[in-house]
Length: 287
Image (tube, rainbow, N blue to C red):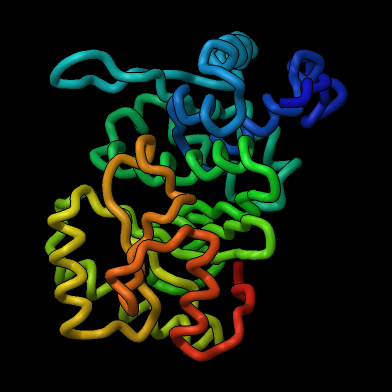
């Protein structure tokens, strides 16, 4: 990784700006947009090793820009979770077009630590951080877009709330996708019911991004494909399963509903989906 030069991403009069690097600014923007990231996730996404990441997080804590907490576990210890402070959100609100960041200042580390869906949020962010890490290590690979649940829902202006939206590219191959991260607590019928909203969106927007279901295990994936085969969805659907930190989301792990015996890399999934639909591949007009 190239060395990071100090930058002043906020205001010239802010002392913290004199201590920040470009990578620090990336860390703060990711935390502001995606609410909470573990030290491990930040290390994968942006740093050469976790020790360097811990060191920079300590600096950001000392500057009052990041809070950290460790959620309780039934056994063992948990990673430090990082959250942007009110100060960071206020500073970034002039640096980021989305002024809604200011309204997130009421969500402090304690409130986030007590969220019942913290594990789900952490899983969603793990998928995208693994893509960032893969891009950092791979020539011609990049996560061009990563939108959070809140940002995606706001852009779409519908009741549909994907867990995230991404645009992934490797060389000339690219794929836009909506992510649904499943922890195994919802019945399959509820997962399938979400596809109606995606189909309505595809028809109104004139494009059809694949809907990606990340599932906890192979049994849940197999059952979902059985249901999809019985009632083929009106939008392209692909699935993967496992732990994102151990199974690269960029790799040939995605099983398309239109070809469930195949396993396709994420970048190739976009072209495969439009061939299935017999439509040209185009970027989503809202995202």
